[in-house]
Every structure is written in C-alpha cells, then in structure tokens.
View (cartoon, rainbow, N blue to C red):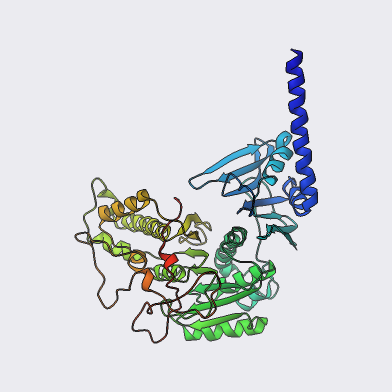
Length: 486
C-alpha cells in the first residue's frame, strides 16, 4: 500500500515537473504565453486555430486544431476540434481541465497560431530557423461568444474601400441592398486568413517576400479589394491582380483603386481566365462565382501556376447537368435524374465532388466547405485546396474512374488537367476546336517565379489561338498527383 502511495506521489511530481517545464518554455517564447492568455479567455475568445508544423522537431499529432467556447446545458466548455487527414475529432473540455488542455496543445509543435478575440487578432508563427514572430492587430468590434451565435466582423463596414465600392454608405453602414454581397465577401475572407497562415507555417508559401495573389473572374472587384484590405491589414506585403474579360469593369475598378491609393500594389487585367498572362507565379488564387466551366478554367490555371493555395466558390454547374440529360443513370439511381430540379441539384454535388477528386490527383489537399449561409447566396460551397505535391492513392484513382464511368460524364476540369481516359459510351464530347491540352502542356514562362526553388520552364500556351502566353507553369512537379480524402 505504501509503495502505491509513493508511486502515485512520484507520478504527480513528474506530471507537475512536466507542466512547470512547459510553462517555462512558454514564458521563454513570449508569444506562446500571449496566445495562452487569449485561449483561456472564456468570455473573449472568438476562435483559435493551430496548424502547420515547426521544422527540426517532431510534428504535432494532427494537421490542425480549432478551438472555441460553447455553452452546454448552461455551462461553458472549450470545444477542441482536431483534424487528421480523414476526419475531425471533437471534444468539450470543462473548466476544471481547461488549463491543462490548452497547455497540452501549446506544447505541441504547431507552426502557427491564429487567435481571434473580441478585442484583437493574434498571429504567431515560426520561421524555418525556428524564430518566433508574433503579430497583434487591435479590433474595435463587439462580438457575441455564445454557442452557435459567434459574430465576427473581419471587414469593418466603414472601411473606405467598401464605401468606394458602394457596399456601404458614407456613414459607414452596409446598404440594405448590399447586405448579401457584403456577407459573401466577408465570409470568404474569414476562410482565407487562417488558410494563408497555415500555408505559410507549413512552408508552402515563403515568408519575407511579397505575397502574390490573383483573383480570377474578379468582376466588380468586391472580393479583390476585400482580400487586399484584409491581408494588408494583417501585415502582408501584397501584390494583387484582378483578371476579368470586361474593359468597362477594369476601368471602373482601376478608378476605385486609385481613389484608395492602392494602385502601386493592385492592378486589373482585361483578359479571359485562359489567356491571362502573369509575370510572377501567384501564391494564392481566388475565384468567387465564376460561371459554369469558368470555375474549371480558374482551377486549371491555379494548378498550372502551381499556386500554393486556392480558394474557389463555384457558381452554376450547367456542364455536368447537360451531360446527365443524355445518359442512362446507373441502377438504382434513375429517380435522382427523373425530376429536373433534383437532377440539377445532384449535378451540383457531383460536379464539385469530381472537381475535388481531380485536384487531389494533381497534388492538392482539398476541403469542400460551406462558406456562407444559403440566405445570402445559394452558391455557398467553397473548394479550399493546398498544394502538397502528394501522389494519389490507387483507391482514389479507382473511385474517381468508377464514378465517371457509372454516370458517363466527362468533367471539364479532368479534360484540362488529367491524361485522356476512354470516353464512356454516350458521354457528350467537346468539339475539337474547343478542347484544351491536359495540364502538363498548359504553361508559359513566368519571368519571376514566386517559388525560386521551383523551375518554371514552359511548353505551349493552353489556347493555341491566344496571341499571348497564358502564364501557367509546365513544371513536371505539378503533374505529380495527390492529396487527402475529403
């Protein structure tokens, strides 16, 4: 009995010693102690995100961790959601175990922390040499932190760019007629910021140089300007390009940018997505509601450029919808295509599932998420893809081939990025003069690659009829497929 007591006491002593050592390590780092204080703020924390891994040490057990406070039966808990390659693992921590749970997470070697409170945003990341960089941004905002009622404003309605765009009035209030558009771009930006932090922490985007961002199909530049404003406020040296084949929109957008004084780092190009030419390979590619196969064109250009991070919210899905009209559905799924509205919605789901599968086969880790409530737009799915260069598993390739064979469809994105496959009987084919080469050939020289370690030798433009090179990289590494399951 005495030996058991002694062992129990020894275990407590060892555990206490470990916690003391962890506390000393946090205090030495400085930044982790600041993050800890924010995470323990039960009334002020909006959310926390840890992702990436530090170099030279054992990596954390999960790809990323998200934290927020929730009220369960009237009692506040810290909800911790840990993501591996396949699923999310959620646990709710009561107040008694709160500090221990937070300290355990801080002791894991995540490469970055992104923490939002009701008063400030903290961004802590580690460089390749292990140096700690902490960025703090004050936020003058009122937010609710109750369960399922968290309201975060990352775009101040009084921001000058929103007034110039006509989204807000001169009193800094969002106009009633522009509420839906404001909500779309704000929610898109909420996903952009932590995704970028994760990419930098993982070393996929190099720190210490200008951040190259492209918005494909930018239209009236609502997202373009919002992303530039958000990323610049976060301390990034941004070089932004908006691309749209609309001379009138380009002139209008340029006037807005000049009025804001942003013209040195933000420009607009009048070109189609396929024919747009860039001098520098982009780190981040955005696309919000590019219609039908224009989303596929945007995704293909991002892959050709070897963009490290891609966020695309598709719009209409006519291509697969049209193909489904002329095929016999596999048994027993005839009911899913018998009624027009059901067939249309099924085609939407099938299209984005196939897009995600194609991106995974060319080296991207993909998530499909809802970025805004359907009351603001029915087109509310977002493809978030991070380039890893991983190779696809045989199961992934088999699942994809089986799906397109069963439904007799030929996705536009696959035509652009994957090697040709036998066309299933009854599948609509694209006219020869519109067909594009597959991904490895769709490239052109970029004079200043954003990733110096990667060569950017090119072959031919993706559109032979285009008079200018398209600006995508024919890097053999791009054709290395892969990713993780949804």
